[in-house]
Length: 412
Figure 1 (cartoon, rainbow, N blue to C red):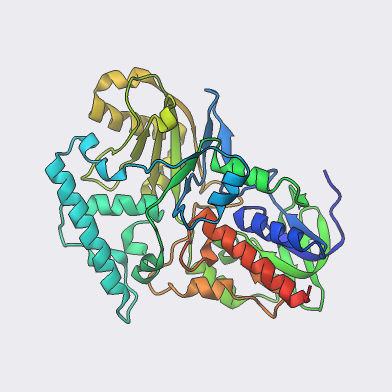
Figure 2 (spheres, one colour):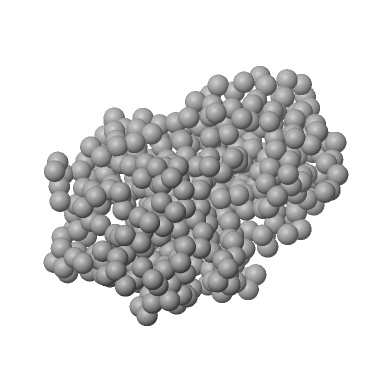
């Protein structure tokens, strides 16, 4: 294990997307000493590609290059030689592959569009209300709207700010990396000075020099860039001394929702497609059949439903998914499925969730969380992104911006 430096000009807390971006920006400057302090034994944070025993990679965390035409990571992936699948995912035909008629699918798409416009109108009002308040009372598609929110926002609509939700920017262009999104961050982090297995518990900012207490000892720095998930700040497993009550409040207004994945090996003969287990209940999964043409089925689920399945474990996740798939394709599919792995992001001690959402009334907390303190403490991460929150590229952009601000503050 590399020796932990006793003093650096800049310490970056976390080696996820934001921390890696900050490190790369500082390395470009080549005039400052810095280190990334990472609690895990790997880089990437919530971008994590594992290898299945079937020989294929699987993204247990983020997977899509969302808004690929504006995504800062897309050209980096191309430059580094990653294989990018630029075929647009056909999410609009999920229902016709899920037992619904084309007429029902058209009705759903119209209702979804009407819902988005209702969110936009509500976001223009003075009050920041829950996104659930704009749904049609007793609407046919309300359960599916809520389920979709647990996949996209990692939380049910009743807990989601309409103003924050409306600020998210999506160009509709979504690409994938055959090697895995997590692998991209492994490459981006390759030559950075990262101290792995180094969990930060306290940042003392009383004096001119910042003192950082870690599981491997204490070091000092002139500047610190904090890139940890909001749960770390809100729950104070990363403490500031003196306390930063405004940061704690802002992080609490941006809790981490939960969205998990489950992977099956699949030996059935079926083309790649997307579908949904049920259109009439919130507790359902979204399915990706044979992604990249590989012999797999990938399942996605979130919100309170995901919380309950995490508590029950992998077997319960697999039983539920197999039951839904058997309902769609018949019981023969049961013998074609073998569970491979699943994510458990709420259980992850260094994440404790998947990605942030703003509670009603807390849409402006992203700016509050991102604001530097005395030009010495800087903050980055997906929760700090005003328009690309919950994404890896949003986190990456904030990391670059924070490091640029640090360099400016050091006048280097």
